[in-house]
Length: 121
Image (tube, rainbow, N blue to C red):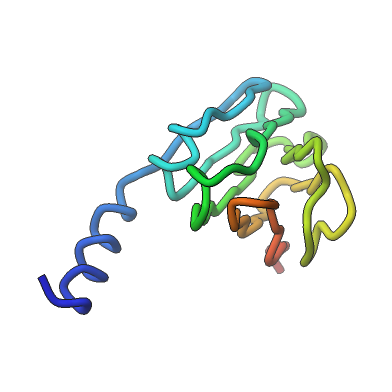
């Protein structure tokens, strides 16, 4: 399989891997590896989602995390007890997502990085 075909195959596989969360949760290594998108529903209340400790099994994991709750007063938080290694969450243990916010989070095997954090206009 060529590199181009492999990239297309990975993109097709990632397009359907969505994890829906509506209550406090600690993600497993498998959930992080198997899901490209984590949708957090905060309609019923604030929802913290904790990432697993970085490790070789998570190297290259790239997550898009979004808060799609209908209540503007409830936040989703992405928690990394070891602190984020850089980017939007540099040095912090949490990235807070208001309703409609999205964050791109990547693991290099040694640390989690919050690469971007967007708020809808």
